[in-house]
Amino acid sequence: MTAPATTVTPPTATTALLAASGLHKTYGSTAALAGADLSVRAGEVVAVMGPSGSGKSTLLHCLAGIVPPDSGTVHYRQQEMSSMSDAERSALRRRDFGFVFQFGQLVPELTCTENVALPLRLAGAKRRAAEERATHWLERLEVEDVRHHRPGQISGGQGQRVAIARALVGDPSVIFADEPTGALDSLNGERVMDLLTDSAKESRTAVVLVTHEARVAAYSDREIVVRDGSARDMAALA
Ligand SMILES: Nc1ncnc2c1ncn2[C@@H]1O[C@H](COP(=O)(O)OP(=O)(O)OP(=O)(O)O)[C@@H](O)[C@H]1O
Ligand SMILES: [Mg+2]
Image (cartoon, rainbow, N blue to C red; front, side):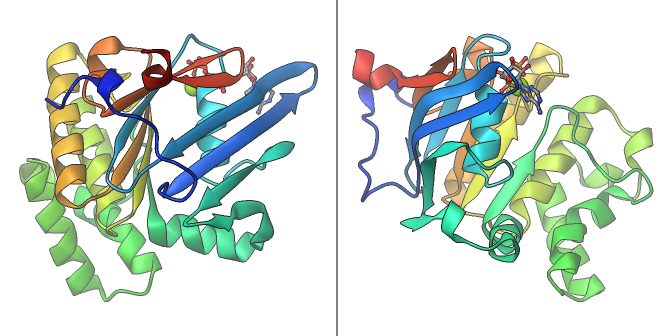
């Protein structure tokens, strides 16, 4: 496990890989984000915590360039995301970002190997090279024995490991994980978190980890708490 989260200070605008500032996002009369700031260094694991409905997923979607904020900025490698074209933003998501969601969201018709190889195939890799790389990551996540199975034939914990392998296969700079252990029991959840954070540290991949569980957040280098649409760094409160 890493050092206590409260000892690590947030990066500055120039040292951050990804930095959000003053994000606002309103849905109808609901302010999902009301001035949220968050920044992440290369290779850092940041936990985003907070009660249900506080704006955690909205913050993650804005950071990943999936949802545009109403106001505020998101910079990735010093470049403002809203200044990019849709095509540039989706290329960025494919090339630099990986995603893990609560229920894995694997493609049911494909085997686990084909699921993990999919981002590489979409980026133009040949089948054999993509599947070799996918097999490496399935081994790293300790699920190579289910590589020929389809998602309907494996357990929830195995599915999350396959989803993490798929997120890491393209060597992303950032993984966005929204409640990646939310559907797992505590033992499986811990194993998945060990594998996710160890693999991310080895590859110097930053992780933005949304969770409402303190024992999951304990895997992070730093904790951010979201309340009523604004985000506070726990280090700043220490
Ligand atoms: N697409 C949307 N349309 C309308 N309202 C939305 C939408 N997305 C989020 N909201 C609202 O914005 C607020 C924040 O939602 P968000 O999903 O970010 O919360 P959360 O912290 O991720 O919650 P949970 O822990 O339950 O996943 C909530 O009140 C939610 O209902
Ligand atoms: Mg959510």
